[in-house]
Length: 374
Image 1 (cartoon, rainbow, N blue to C red):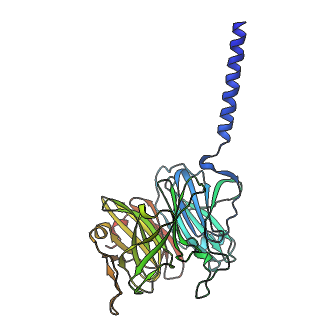
Image 2 (image 1 turned 60 degrees about the vertical axis):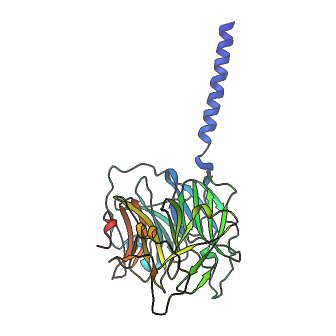
Image 3 (image 1 turned 90 degrees about the horizontal axis):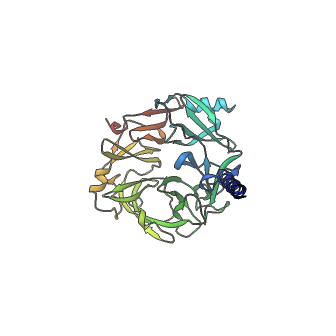
Protein backbone atom coordinates (compact mmCIF):
# COMPACT_ATOMS: atom_id res chain seq x y z
CA UNK A 1 0.00 0.00 0.00
CA UNK A 2 2.76 2.43 0.95
CA UNK A 3 4.69 1.47 -2.20
CA UNK A 4 1.72 2.22 -4.46
CA UNK A 5 1.14 5.57 -2.75
CA UNK A 6 4.79 6.42 -3.30
CA UNK A 7 4.55 5.48 -6.97
CA UNK A 8 1.47 7.64 -7.40
CA UNK A 9 3.21 10.56 -5.69
CA UNK A 10 6.30 10.16 -7.88
CA UNK A 11 4.14 9.97 -10.99
CA UNK A 12 2.36 13.17 -9.97
CA UNK A 13 5.65 14.98 -9.44
CA UNK A 14 6.92 13.82 -12.84
CA UNK A 15 3.75 15.06 -14.54
CA UNK A 16 4.06 18.45 -12.85
CA UNK A 17 7.74 18.74 -13.78
CA UNK A 18 6.97 17.75 -17.35
CA UNK A 19 4.25 20.39 -17.53
CA UNK A 20 6.61 23.00 -16.11
CA UNK A 21 9.28 22.04 -18.63
CA UNK A 22 6.74 22.18 -21.45
CA UNK A 23 5.59 25.64 -20.43
CA UNK A 24 9.19 26.74 -20.02
CA UNK A 25 10.09 25.63 -23.52
CA UNK A 26 7.07 27.52 -24.88
CA UNK A 27 8.22 30.77 -23.31
CA UNK A 28 10.26 32.82 -25.74
CA UNK A 29 13.23 34.86 -24.54
CA UNK A 30 13.01 38.61 -23.89
CA UNK A 31 9.18 38.56 -23.93
CA UNK A 32 9.22 37.92 -27.68
CA UNK A 33 6.26 36.52 -29.59
CA UNK A 34 5.90 34.57 -32.80
CA UNK A 35 4.67 36.47 -35.81
CA UNK A 36 5.56 38.65 -38.78
CA UNK A 37 6.49 42.25 -37.91
CA UNK A 38 5.09 44.74 -40.40
CA UNK A 39 8.30 46.66 -41.02
CA UNK A 40 7.60 49.58 -43.35
CA UNK A 41 11.11 51.05 -43.43
CA UNK A 42 14.56 50.35 -42.02
CA UNK A 43 16.02 53.61 -40.80
CA UNK A 44 18.71 52.12 -38.57
CA UNK A 45 20.07 48.79 -37.32
CA UNK A 46 21.74 47.78 -34.04
CA UNK A 47 22.49 44.53 -32.25
CA UNK A 48 21.51 43.70 -28.70
CA UNK A 49 22.15 40.57 -26.63
CA UNK A 50 22.27 37.02 -28.01
CA UNK A 51 21.67 37.78 -31.66
CA UNK A 52 18.77 40.18 -31.10
CA UNK A 53 18.59 42.65 -33.99
CA UNK A 54 16.89 46.00 -33.45
CA UNK A 55 15.24 47.53 -36.52
CA UNK A 56 14.35 51.20 -36.35
CA UNK A 57 11.32 51.93 -38.52
CA UNK A 58 10.59 55.66 -38.92
CA UNK A 59 7.51 55.15 -41.10
CA UNK A 60 5.90 53.04 -38.39
CA UNK A 61 7.40 55.17 -35.57
CA UNK A 62 8.46 51.89 -33.99
CA UNK A 63 11.44 49.73 -33.17
CA UNK A 64 11.33 45.97 -33.66
CA UNK A 65 13.50 43.44 -31.82
CA UNK A 66 14.01 40.31 -33.93
CA UNK A 67 15.65 37.11 -32.74
CA UNK A 68 18.00 36.24 -35.60
CA UNK A 69 19.18 33.08 -33.77
CA UNK A 70 22.51 33.92 -35.37
CA UNK A 71 24.59 33.01 -32.33
CA UNK A 72 27.32 30.74 -33.66
CA UNK A 73 30.74 32.33 -33.72
CA UNK A 74 33.01 31.81 -36.73
CA UNK A 75 36.11 29.65 -36.51
CA UNK A 76 38.06 32.64 -37.77
CA UNK A 77 37.14 36.16 -38.86
CA UNK A 78 37.73 36.78 -42.54
CA UNK A 79 38.44 40.18 -43.98
CA UNK A 80 35.75 41.72 -46.17
CA UNK A 81 36.38 43.02 -49.66
CA UNK A 82 33.28 43.12 -51.86
CA UNK A 83 33.53 45.30 -54.95
CA UNK A 84 30.36 46.94 -56.30
CA UNK A 85 28.21 45.47 -53.56
CA UNK A 86 25.25 47.57 -54.68
CA UNK A 87 25.36 46.01 -58.12
CA UNK A 88 25.58 42.48 -56.69
CA UNK A 89 22.62 43.08 -54.38
CA UNK A 90 20.61 44.66 -57.18
CA UNK A 91 21.21 41.63 -59.38
CA UNK A 92 20.01 39.33 -56.59
CA UNK A 93 16.87 41.44 -56.26
CA UNK A 94 16.27 41.47 -60.00
CA UNK A 95 16.82 45.20 -60.46
CA UNK A 96 19.58 47.72 -61.09
CA UNK A 97 21.87 49.47 -58.62
CA UNK A 98 20.27 52.86 -59.22
CA UNK A 99 17.02 51.38 -57.91
CA UNK A 100 18.30 50.44 -54.45
CA UNK A 101 19.80 52.24 -51.45
CA UNK A 102 21.88 50.72 -48.66
CA UNK A 103 20.65 52.70 -45.65
CA UNK A 104 22.63 51.08 -42.84
CA UNK A 105 24.98 48.25 -41.96
CA UNK A 106 25.53 46.44 -38.66
CA UNK A 107 27.83 43.58 -37.65
CA UNK A 108 26.53 40.80 -35.44
CA UNK A 109 29.13 40.80 -32.64
CA UNK A 110 28.78 37.02 -32.22
CA UNK A 111 28.72 35.61 -35.77
CA UNK A 112 30.53 38.59 -37.38
CA UNK A 113 27.98 38.56 -40.20
CA UNK A 114 27.25 41.91 -41.80
CA UNK A 115 23.57 42.86 -41.88
CA UNK A 116 22.50 45.33 -44.57
CA UNK A 117 19.37 47.48 -44.57
CA UNK A 118 18.30 47.99 -48.18
CA UNK A 119 15.48 50.02 -49.68
CA UNK A 120 14.21 49.46 -53.19
CA UNK A 121 13.05 52.24 -55.46
CA UNK A 122 9.40 51.79 -54.44
CA UNK A 123 10.32 52.08 -50.75
CA UNK A 124 10.17 48.36 -49.93
CA UNK A 125 12.62 47.48 -47.12
CA UNK A 126 14.89 44.46 -47.56
CA UNK A 127 17.23 42.91 -45.00
CA UNK A 128 20.22 40.82 -46.10
CA UNK A 129 23.34 39.28 -44.57
CA UNK A 130 26.85 38.89 -45.89
CA UNK A 131 29.19 36.22 -44.57
CA UNK A 132 32.29 34.79 -46.27
CA UNK A 133 31.33 36.55 -49.49
CA UNK A 134 27.84 35.04 -49.65
CA UNK A 135 24.58 36.98 -49.47
CA UNK A 136 21.43 35.66 -47.84
CA UNK A 137 18.01 37.25 -47.31
CA UNK A 138 16.72 37.67 -43.77
CA UNK A 139 13.07 36.74 -43.53
CA UNK A 140 10.75 38.65 -41.23
CA UNK A 141 7.94 36.14 -41.56
CA UNK A 142 7.09 33.82 -38.66
CA UNK A 143 9.94 35.01 -36.47
CA UNK A 144 10.37 35.70 -32.77
CA UNK A 145 9.99 39.43 -32.28
CA UNK A 146 8.78 42.28 -30.09
CA UNK A 147 7.92 45.86 -30.93
CA UNK A 148 7.69 49.18 -29.19
CA UNK A 149 5.75 52.13 -30.55
CA UNK A 150 7.51 55.45 -29.92
CA UNK A 151 5.55 57.94 -27.88
CA UNK A 152 4.91 61.46 -29.18
CA UNK A 153 6.21 60.73 -32.67
CA UNK A 154 5.61 63.16 -35.57
CA UNK A 155 2.45 62.56 -37.54
CA UNK A 156 2.51 60.95 -40.97
CA UNK A 157 1.65 64.26 -42.66
CA UNK A 158 3.70 66.58 -40.43
CA UNK A 159 6.11 68.88 -42.33
CA UNK A 160 8.91 71.20 -41.33
CA UNK A 161 9.19 74.83 -42.44
CA UNK A 162 10.57 73.74 -45.80
CA UNK A 163 7.77 71.29 -46.46
CA UNK A 164 9.89 68.21 -45.70
CA UNK A 165 8.44 65.21 -43.90
CA UNK A 166 9.17 65.12 -40.17
CA UNK A 167 8.09 61.50 -39.90
CA UNK A 168 11.21 60.26 -41.69
CA UNK A 169 13.31 61.73 -38.86
CA UNK A 170 11.38 59.96 -36.09
CA UNK A 171 14.43 57.69 -35.83
CA UNK A 172 17.82 59.02 -36.88
CA UNK A 173 20.03 56.48 -35.06
CA UNK A 174 19.77 53.62 -32.57
CA UNK A 175 22.16 51.77 -30.30
CA UNK A 176 22.00 49.26 -27.43
CA UNK A 177 23.92 49.29 -24.16
CA UNK A 178 23.49 47.93 -20.63
CA UNK A 179 19.96 46.63 -21.09
CA UNK A 180 18.60 49.71 -22.82
CA UNK A 181 17.80 50.61 -26.40
CA UNK A 182 18.76 54.20 -27.20
CA UNK A 183 16.90 56.08 -29.94
CA UNK A 184 17.58 59.55 -31.32
CA UNK A 185 15.26 61.51 -33.59
CA UNK A 186 12.29 63.86 -33.53
CA UNK A 187 9.07 64.07 -31.55
CA UNK A 188 5.91 66.11 -32.02
CA UNK A 189 6.73 68.34 -29.04
CA UNK A 190 7.82 72.00 -29.13
CA UNK A 191 11.41 71.01 -28.35
CA UNK A 192 11.36 68.21 -30.92
CA UNK A 193 14.98 67.00 -30.81
CA UNK A 194 14.58 63.86 -28.73
CA UNK A 195 16.53 61.07 -27.08
CA UNK A 196 14.68 57.98 -25.88
CA UNK A 197 15.99 55.29 -23.56
CA UNK A 198 13.86 52.14 -23.65
CA UNK A 199 14.42 49.09 -21.41
CA UNK A 200 14.87 45.76 -23.15
CA UNK A 201 12.96 43.43 -22.86
CA UNK A 202 10.44 46.06 -23.92
CA UNK A 203 7.99 47.41 -21.36
CA UNK A 204 5.57 50.33 -21.38
CA UNK A 205 8.37 52.56 -20.06
CA UNK A 206 10.09 55.10 -22.32
CA UNK A 207 12.45 57.67 -20.81
CA UNK A 208 12.04 60.69 -23.03
CA UNK A 209 14.38 63.71 -22.90
CA UNK A 210 14.33 66.77 -25.13
CA UNK A 211 17.70 68.14 -26.22
CA UNK A 212 19.18 71.58 -26.75
CA UNK A 213 22.55 72.50 -28.22
CA UNK A 214 24.46 75.62 -29.11
CA UNK A 215 25.33 75.48 -32.79
CA UNK A 216 28.34 77.75 -33.15
CA UNK A 217 28.36 77.61 -36.96
CA UNK A 218 24.74 78.82 -36.95
CA UNK A 219 25.31 81.14 -34.01
CA UNK A 220 22.24 80.05 -32.04
CA UNK A 221 20.70 77.54 -29.65
CA UNK A 222 18.70 74.77 -31.35
CA UNK A 223 16.00 72.41 -30.09
CA UNK A 224 14.43 71.13 -33.31
CA UNK A 225 17.43 69.64 -35.12
CA UNK A 226 17.73 65.88 -34.53
CA UNK A 227 20.93 64.06 -33.71
CA UNK A 228 22.16 62.56 -36.98
CA UNK A 229 24.54 59.97 -35.50
CA UNK A 230 25.60 59.06 -31.98
CA UNK A 231 27.63 56.69 -29.88
CA UNK A 232 28.42 56.40 -26.19
CA UNK A 233 31.70 56.49 -24.31
CA UNK A 234 33.47 57.36 -21.09
CA UNK A 235 34.97 60.81 -20.71
CA UNK A 236 37.02 61.24 -17.56
CA UNK A 237 35.30 58.22 -16.04
CA UNK A 238 31.72 59.33 -16.77
CA UNK A 239 29.39 57.87 -19.42
CA UNK A 240 28.27 60.28 -22.13
CA UNK A 241 26.08 60.31 -25.17
CA UNK A 242 28.36 61.62 -27.92
CA UNK A 243 26.22 63.13 -30.65
CA UNK A 244 26.82 64.74 -34.02
CA UNK A 245 24.44 67.05 -35.84
CA UNK A 246 24.15 68.48 -39.34
CA UNK A 247 26.75 71.21 -40.09
CA UNK A 248 28.66 69.56 -37.88
CA UNK A 249 28.66 70.20 -34.11
CA UNK A 250 29.91 67.44 -31.80
CA UNK A 251 28.04 67.49 -28.48
CA UNK A 252 28.30 65.69 -25.13
CA UNK A 253 25.27 64.79 -22.99
CA UNK A 254 25.75 63.05 -19.60
CA UNK A 255 23.78 59.81 -19.86
CA UNK A 256 22.66 60.00 -16.23
CA UNK A 257 20.89 63.31 -16.96
CA UNK A 258 18.86 62.00 -19.90
CA UNK A 259 15.86 60.98 -17.80
CA UNK A 260 12.12 60.95 -18.40
CA UNK A 261 10.66 64.40 -18.87
CA UNK A 262 13.95 66.29 -18.72
CA UNK A 263 15.22 69.01 -21.02
CA UNK A 264 19.00 68.71 -21.32
CA UNK A 265 21.48 71.21 -22.75
CA UNK A 266 24.46 69.53 -24.32
CA UNK A 267 28.06 70.73 -24.19
CA UNK A 268 29.25 71.55 -27.70
CA UNK A 269 32.89 70.52 -27.86
CA UNK A 270 33.62 70.90 -31.56
CA UNK A 271 32.47 72.47 -34.79
CA UNK A 272 33.73 70.25 -37.60
CA UNK A 273 32.66 72.13 -40.72
CA UNK A 274 29.51 73.79 -42.06
CA UNK A 275 27.52 72.46 -45.02
CA UNK A 276 28.20 68.89 -43.95
CA UNK A 277 26.10 66.04 -42.60
CA UNK A 278 27.52 63.29 -40.39
CA UNK A 279 26.54 59.93 -41.86
CA UNK A 280 27.78 57.57 -39.15
CA UNK A 281 29.68 57.72 -35.86
CA UNK A 282 31.26 54.90 -33.88
CA UNK A 283 33.69 54.60 -30.99
CA UNK A 284 36.68 52.27 -31.18
CA UNK A 285 39.29 51.08 -28.73
CA UNK A 286 42.55 49.28 -29.37
CA UNK A 287 45.86 48.98 -27.54
CA UNK A 288 44.61 51.26 -24.79
CA UNK A 289 43.63 54.02 -27.22
CA UNK A 290 40.01 55.16 -27.55
CA UNK A 291 38.82 57.26 -30.45
CA UNK A 292 35.79 58.32 -32.47
CA UNK A 293 35.43 57.70 -36.18
CA UNK A 294 32.93 59.75 -38.19
CA UNK A 295 31.79 59.39 -41.80
CA UNK A 296 30.65 62.60 -43.51
CA UNK A 297 28.70 63.69 -46.56
CA UNK A 298 31.12 66.44 -47.71
CA UNK A 299 34.33 65.69 -45.84
CA UNK A 300 36.67 62.74 -45.47
CA UNK A 301 36.31 60.42 -42.49
CA UNK A 302 37.24 62.23 -39.26
CA UNK A 303 39.04 60.68 -36.32
CA UNK A 304 38.98 62.11 -32.78
CA UNK A 305 41.20 60.93 -29.93
CA UNK A 306 39.30 60.55 -26.64
CA UNK A 307 42.28 62.10 -24.87
CA UNK A 308 41.60 65.33 -26.74
CA UNK A 309 37.95 65.18 -25.70
CA UNK A 310 38.94 64.64 -22.06
CA UNK A 311 41.38 67.52 -22.08
CA UNK A 312 38.85 69.96 -23.58
CA UNK A 313 37.13 71.50 -20.57
CA UNK A 314 35.22 74.33 -22.19
CA UNK A 315 32.12 74.61 -24.33
CA UNK A 316 31.47 76.47 -27.57
CA UNK A 317 28.91 79.15 -26.70
CA UNK A 318 29.77 81.95 -29.15
CA UNK A 319 29.16 82.14 -32.92
CA UNK A 320 32.12 81.28 -35.14
CA UNK A 321 33.83 84.22 -36.79
CA UNK A 322 33.15 84.57 -40.51
CA UNK A 323 36.61 83.32 -41.46
CA UNK A 324 36.56 80.37 -39.01
CA UNK A 325 35.26 77.00 -40.21
CA UNK A 326 36.14 74.71 -37.29
CA UNK A 327 36.70 75.11 -33.56
CA UNK A 328 36.96 73.17 -30.31
CA UNK A 329 38.38 69.66 -29.93
CA UNK A 330 41.10 68.71 -32.40
CA UNK A 331 40.23 66.16 -35.04
CA UNK A 332 42.12 64.60 -37.92
CA UNK A 333 40.99 64.10 -41.49
CA UNK A 334 41.79 60.67 -42.88
CA UNK A 335 42.52 59.79 -46.53
CA UNK A 336 39.12 58.04 -46.73
CA UNK A 337 36.50 59.92 -48.74
CA UNK A 338 32.89 59.15 -49.66
CA UNK A 339 32.39 56.65 -46.84
CA UNK A 340 28.63 56.15 -46.49
CA UNK A 341 28.44 53.83 -43.47
CA UNK A 342 30.65 52.48 -40.68
CA UNK A 343 30.35 49.41 -38.47
CA UNK A 344 32.44 47.91 -35.71
CA UNK A 345 33.38 44.25 -36.11
CA UNK A 346 35.57 44.06 -33.01
CA UNK A 347 37.74 46.43 -30.98
CA UNK A 348 40.28 46.86 -33.75
CA UNK A 349 38.37 46.07 -36.93
CA UNK A 350 36.01 48.34 -38.81
CA UNK A 351 33.75 47.81 -41.82
CA UNK A 352 33.36 50.58 -44.42
CA UNK A 353 30.72 51.13 -47.09
CA UNK A 354 32.48 53.45 -49.52
CA UNK A 355 31.45 55.03 -52.79
CA UNK A 356 34.22 54.74 -55.37
CA UNK A 357 35.13 57.06 -58.21
CA UNK A 358 33.17 54.91 -60.69
CA UNK A 359 30.00 55.41 -58.62
CA UNK A 360 29.86 51.85 -57.28
CA UNK A 361 29.75 50.99 -53.57
CA UNK A 362 32.46 48.78 -52.07
CA UNK A 363 32.22 47.05 -48.69
CA UNK A 364 35.54 46.36 -47.03
CA UNK A 365 37.11 45.89 -43.61
CA UNK A 366 40.35 46.93 -41.98
CA UNK A 367 42.06 45.80 -38.79
CA UNK A 368 44.28 48.88 -38.98
CA UNK A 369 41.47 51.18 -37.90
CA UNK A 370 43.62 52.91 -35.29
CA UNK A 371 45.97 54.12 -38.06
CA UNK A 372 43.44 55.65 -40.43
CA UNK A 373 45.18 59.00 -40.44
CA UNK A 374 48.56 57.52 -41.38
